[in-house]
Image 1: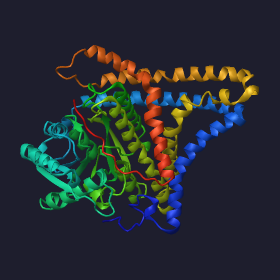
Image 2: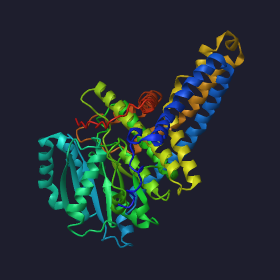
Image 3: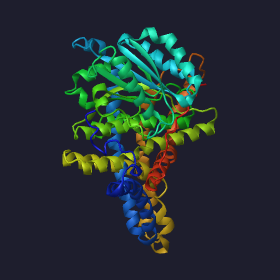
Length: 512
């Protein structure tokens, strides 16, 4: 494999290194949490000892948040229109202008203990695609630690659907492999290698002509997805130096999910939509696609970490000395919103899932460390990328807390001298008014969320009432971005700062 010579390429954490490299990597692991906690504690200290400075900082920050909200809302609206447009396009007709019959799609579906309904819906969506299933290789990737029941379920799916596809392969990732973390990354890497040996090599299918889609098991593709993906693969300048990213819609069970789950899920969708309009800031997330040739050359997804979905992009960026990009295809795939058997368990699962997602901060030390070691990547690319990543995780963990919790601190902690000033009187009013103006972005979010709703289940009653609640539910956003965004983000950075590394938590899939 072309890039296996680098001793740093697949590093997962500081404990895997020795000497000065370990010290440097450990310092970089501390950096994100240090910045976030330094900001939050700094505001508190300023409010006590320099309340005037703290007040001016808070006003400046509120203005920054207002302009940032406007900026993000503009991008969200643009991508909303782009996604709607792309969903209406006749991608099959557009493909007819190209030679594409030589291309093969490999779809890897890793599963653990998910039920029949979840797995079958995902496979059935592939069958119903407007792209020929005979040009698809479906790899149903199970785990040995899931037990015989999971394997029997996979066999049931193979018996029912294998004839619909060009190839249908079941893999079982062995448990307790030294150097691996139990999770999606190790599973899909194992599955890809088995598929290479047993399908690609046996049938002499070109690696360069194979597009791999690594999906979560609840991923349901929209009918035109593979035609859209194929068109983008054929039209980019170099498809082997690009990953392809759809927009995740959490629509599979949206009508059954509680309001909190819907708001959190849709907020994640909106963030991905904004990023689609800023491809220079986009990394692969969740379900994504990549050339098998490129994937094989870097040794597949990392097996020793949690955030394999985004790490594969950073692996590819380092391997290609900065000449690698994510192509936003602005076309959706559908997945599950968080839903459990009861409301409180749903809240716990939402928190755990977002903590796992925000554990993507483990990529920051990897990026910075490899930027230091790799002298071939242009300095401009290094500086820009490093700033984007550091600022992104800092904003995630600090901004909601500063906006909704710390704005009153100078008034509370500033003492009598500060409270006797006009600034003290006007600070809460000004902060409130700026936040009210910023909240107009919620109206746009509510409208967009309704426009992408799937049809309600056949037996669903009071659709109009539910849609009304779906508009009103966005009043929860100050709570959700703090409780399920900033706090798990801050916890993830704190764990990384103290070397309390996380393992992979599998989000349970529940359908009513």
